[in-house]
Every structure is written in structure tokens, then in C-alpha cells.
Length: 304
Image (cartoon, rainbow, N blue to C red; front, top):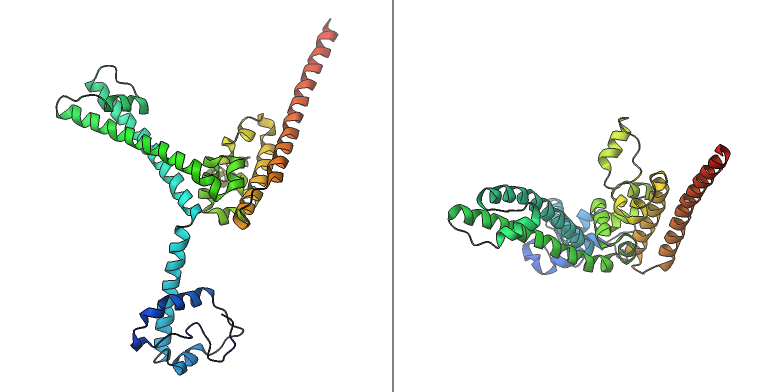
């Protein structure tokens, strides 16, 4: 809202409080959220003069109500955004996995005392869940195992959902990191927009906050990577080159998140540049191996 009239304001067009202004609440919320003015003015006076408010105090009461309503609507819309739903999905998946594994230990211990050849873990719980119980205790043990199996199945279903949703929410990030790692990075950052605004150095150590705080307090070396360690480009690179691999990957992941947030278009150049950079890092490792082998041959010849 840009003002062209002295009486214009976020309340322009609204009715007085005594007129039960339920019909224009959405318009008022929109003007609170999106409005702007060329310069400050005596808005309470203008509101009273226009008949919107009965007094200055009434104006501030209505401003408060409209501001709270606008904030609630903005939060509601943000929580329904696709990246937020992806965050909920990956966190729910982790909760299901953690809870299933914890209960599987209890179920295995209980089932082992009641049944022969009861196996530990999720698969053991699934096998017990298919047994025909005999008596109240066996029914409870079988029921607990069934809950473990259900949680494990829900975890797998959530993983499939993430695999489908992540490429639509963040196509470049999901292709570069894989759907699950992309979802975890978005969750750790608090959303795709937040991830897009972070520097690559922060993205590099997302998930390693404890190690980073220990480093800052002088109790540990600086972490080279956080959750991106699970990416094959870092995990499958020799330890002495993982710092370089982590920096290269984090840099491109940051750019991918920015492209996804601000344009949503797939950029092949990002992926090609990352592949080229990783090839360079790994070629350096191979050259190091060749040097080691050459040195060994020379030493052998010298011994002879």
C-alpha cells in the first residue's frame, strides 16, 4: 500500500469496531502484512477521523488484534510450505527409526525369554509379531513386537515420501546431495530459505555443532565436516583430502540451495562443476599414490 491520500493507512476501507468488522478482517491482515507508507503520520488521529476507531486507545487495540491475526496467518502459511513439510517428514522418520530401535531391544529381550530362537533387531521383532501367542504375556510381547514392526514400516514409508517430495522442493539440492541428505540439511538449517542464506562454511559443519562448540572452547580441533560426511564425495575420499572435498561440496550445496529457493530451476552447470572439482581432488590422491609407488620402487632398486 503506497499512500496517495492523507487519510490512507492500513485501516483504510475498514469499518468501525462497533460495526462488527468481521467481513474485512482478511483485507486488514493483508494491509498489515504488505502495506507501506511514504512517511510516518499520525495514524491514530487519521483512524479516528476516518471513523475506523472510536479513540486512540481503540485504534491501538485494533492494530494489536490485526497484527496478531496477520502474524498467525503468516506462520500458518509458512508451516504449510513444502520445505517445512519436508522438515516434518525427515524429523518424523528419525523419530520412528530411533524409537523402533529402542523398542526392538526391549522386544528382543522379552521375546527371548518366552520363545525359542528369537532374533534381535527389527527383523527379529517382525518375526515375533507373526507368531501366534499363547497366554497374556505372549500376547503382550507379540503386540510390542508388532508395534516395532509398524514403526519400522512407517519409517520406510516416510523415506519413500521424502524421496518423492525432496526433488520437487529443492531439485538441485536433492540431485546433488540425494533426497534424504537434502532434507536433513534443510531441517538442520530450519528451512530452505534459511539454508540458502547461510555461508558455505556453515553448511559444511551443519550437524557437527557439538564438535564446533568444543573447538571454539579450545577442547577439540576444528571439524572438517558435519552431516555432509554421509555424501559419497566426502565419505569415499581419503582422509587427508576430506577437508578439500567437504569445502567443495558445501560450496556447491549452498549454491544449489540458493538456486532452488530463488528460482527453482535445475542448473546443470552446478553439478558439472562439482563433478569436475571432485575429479581434480581424487586425481591428486591418485598422483600421491603413484609417487608413493615410484618411491618404493626406487628404494627397492637402491637396496639391490
